[in-house]
Image (spheres, rainbow, N blue to C red):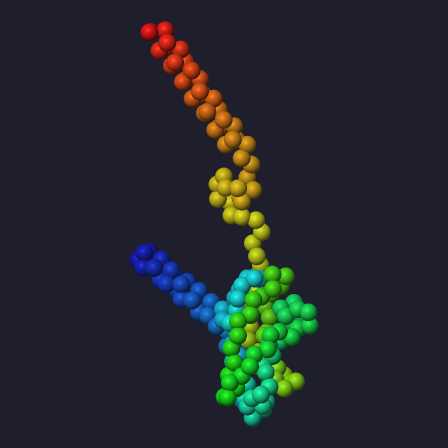
Length: 173
């Protein structure tokens, strides 16, 4: 019974992880829609932003402008613009600046100089500091003096053994 419970916990965790890493969709609006994928990303990562703006509310010749705050879209909070097809759909990839602080942002949409009134959540996760604590690796930040001395001692010992062997074999001849 314990193994069945553990298996269910693993399956539930995997299911939740898959759902949590998917695209973040905005609530439907007659004016348009926007989604981001993945919905959780680290600074420096690329996010795919797609959606649609009604051609009745904003002429197809006008670009869609992605917007939020100056932290996500420096320097003024207005992000990239995307051309729209004949039905108002657009898509683009955006690299989240490495200077973006961790937090949850609501990526919005503008067209024709006004807000479309839709948004999608994008969570920026903090970048881990330093390397993983993985033994005596250089990025782990551990001192290598013990291992350096140990290795040097082994080399000295091996040299002494070889020197003594030659001296002993030289006496037998």
